[in-house]
Image (cartoon, rainbow, N blue to C red; front, side, top):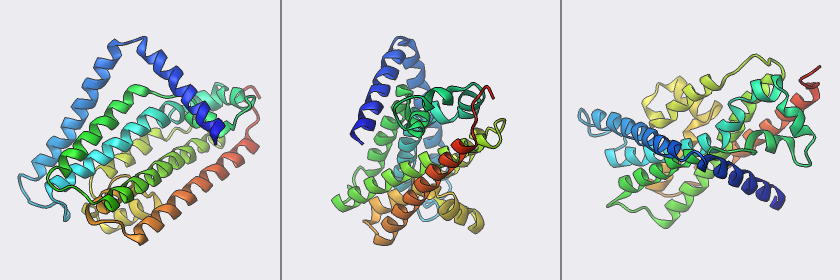
Length: 260
């Protein structure tokens, strides 16, 4: 783990130095992140002009949910999208995976976390600001904060695993790129899962556990840790991670190289 941590830090450092050579991009990325966040908040404010609760959530609570969603979206955009979103084209068809397989490091780590888009972390920072805005005047308990942090980590693990599982489909169907589908589904985590009809709510909770992205962590932050929710999140994260690793290994057995 220490070796992987050093590799991760080195990859992030190189990505940051490369990004800072184009400093004008920083202003555009910040402006885009702010515009996207303001759009989300405007939608929430518009909803609350017609109601006092959204599926049982008050306006400050919904702000906290949006903030948590933006936090994990920023992490996803910074570390997963630069690697996995283009894996079918770069990794399989262009042969980048061949290079990863020759390196003295786990190929799955290199394929999913080798590079980064550091400026996307601006969105994560803004998300924390919105989370703090929602919690202003109603500070959560220390146990609630600890539970929120654990659930956010579980949500990050599930996010990584889902990205890997979709990328692994390229081993069997190299022309298949499902990142657009994944990003569309991801948008559903922006709001409380309680607003959706029962079939979709069950899908987002148990099949594609996007409830872990925002709804479950913020519920724990507001109401304190629930042992059942923590256990379910841990099982979901462990199961998703195991499935991702298994799918990757099965894919590598099928993979014969970009030039074959």
